[in-house]
Length: 69
Image 1 (cartoon, rainbow, N blue to C red):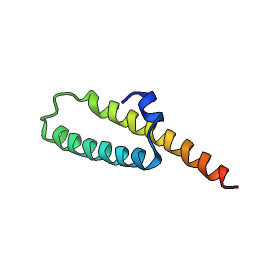
Image 2: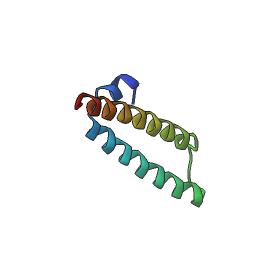
Image 3: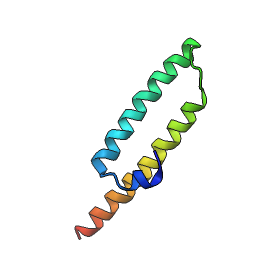
Image 4: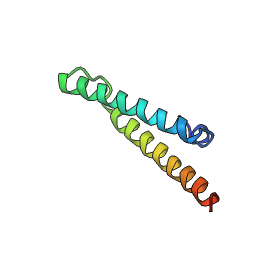
């Protein structure tokens, strides 16, 4: 997912996407333990994408909470 696409998502969509990616990482780790993981670089890529999503989620929630004051 590109950064421009991430910026357009709502906080609820960001949280949902984060959960999806964490579930995918879980399945990839199971494959890795079984020795069936063909593309181990996907783990790093997904972790990086989760970090980006969390960053934008934090930014959006702080913007909305600061507007409340």
